[in-house]
Length: 265
Image 1 (cartoon, rainbow, N blue to C red):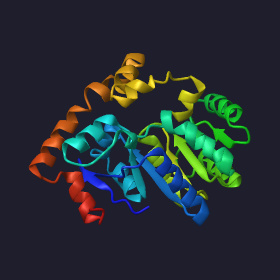
Image 2 (image 1 turned 90 degrees about the vertical axis):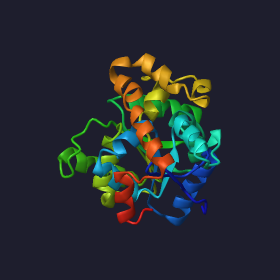
Image 3 (image 1 turned 135 degrees about the vertical axis):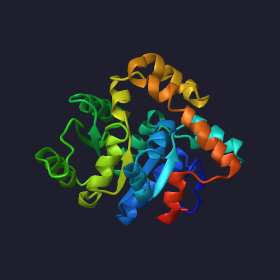
Image 4 (image 1 turned 60 degrees about the vertical axis):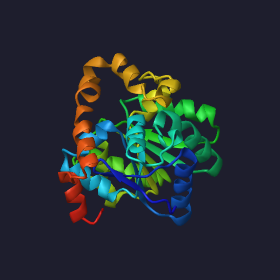
């Protein structure tokens, strides 16, 4: 895919729709190539600018799609020709992704969720898409690189030989885990999928899709889990105003300077 990424708010973003993301996975499978397809939203943006290990993870990602309507709106404000369909969240993507996986015999492995939740979600997906090959294990493991649980998890993934590995252990735990274990994984596309199967299983309520389309999905999530999400949605976004001001004034921020020194910009 030859589309150039956009660079704003100190990060690199790829304006990709669901069909284009599915095409990237098809390309990875056909070329037997291992690649990370990451995503950015306001929460990851905040973590990125405060966590060097998160910056190292995104430096490894070949593509980073947009998972935030506010980022689409900020991009448009800064003059980038972003479209609504280029905001892709797993609540929307999981269904066409699994449909294509079932048609093309892609094997999927999902690492994440509480014990039993991922399997429930996988059962729902198998019923909807007959023939879907999906295996899963919960994300409540000792993630230290050489712990018995971590080594057993990597062995289970590699034995299954998935075309798609979805890691849903929340930010930044999932990104840290991928970065720590990338060299030991025998997979094609690696996706940071958050609470993807939690939504499918009904363990976490899925926001109405019309709210996602107009940028109000955060409000639904905040009202559903205020104790867990109040800081993410009421405090962290203010950090965006500083980044936006730096962008307008064309002043590089620290993370951007670090990326330049590593050859990302």
